[in-house]
Amino acid sequence: MALGVKIDFDNIYETIPVIENLNESFFETELEDGTRTNLHVEVDNRPHKLRPNLHNLAFGPLNKKGQIDDRAQLTHSDYSKVFSTILFEAKNYLLRNPDHQLGIDGSTNGRAYLYFRFLKRNYDYLSKYFDIYCVKYYVRIARLGEEQFEDPFDFEDVMIHEEKFGKNTKNNPKFMYNYFIFKLK
Image 1 (cartoon, rainbow, N blue to C red):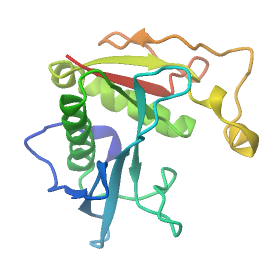
Image 2 (image 1 turned 180 degrees about the vertical axis):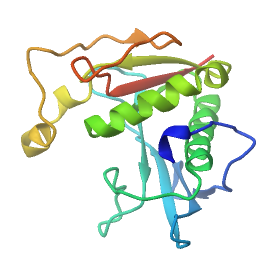
Image 3 (image 1 turned 90 degrees about the horizontal axis):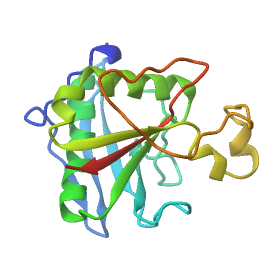
């Protein structure tokens, strides 16, 4: 089940770099029904508009246009291995680019809560490698057009500064962190 994710960098899928873009790789994962699919992991080459060293980390299958579909709904046979692989790739990117930070956007409230639970459950392990920060609605304030309203929020309730993520960090639907920043230790 997705909530029981245990991050372990010794239990990952083999990744294949995309030669044209050194910030992108993919790996094959097995789904619950036995089928296999490729998941792409990509770090945006452009830093975030409001933070010069912050780069977005996206992951998911590719859509018909060849772009990562971060809203795809897949049922993995091993969620721990999937998320361990994604975060292992994040760690490797940060080792190559130590002045950068990586951000993961919970594209929906459900995903944001899931990521929060993963991080909290694996805090002891991940804190050996990363300083982790959380932000509420950070990326969504920079979105334009229809995308901004797909998962609506209260515009009066926006926090644009990061808070250190720790074992005792609380999250709830009224104050939900939806962007998580990773800095190399």
